[in-house]
Length: 136
Figure (cartoon, one colour):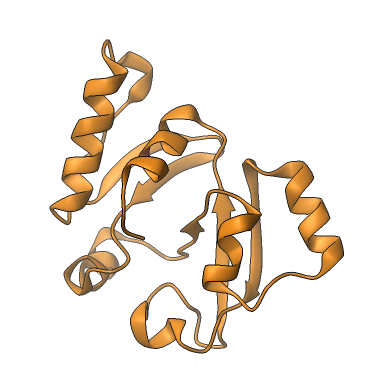
């Protein structure tokens, strides 16, 4: 499902549509600051298995900010945390060592060498989606 929020006449309805599509395990594509975001549920094996056919090469976890980082990593150095606090939300991504238990649960999100990419979007709809869902 590819949606363009720029032409949405009712943003609340678009938000409900995206959240329901994600709950059902669909991929949702949205324009982002530097390309497109392809949103999906990282906790659903069926969605993860579809990724190669969807053309996904490099996955990033969409986080609400540095407060979410510890759920995925062992934490950030103080200098990296300060940098991300200044620049997030925004199109800057970060790469950090994943927690050891993440690869078993979210296999495609963590690289073979144990790192996870993180990103925090500044678009109001993406932020609203993140706060409206109760899953990764």
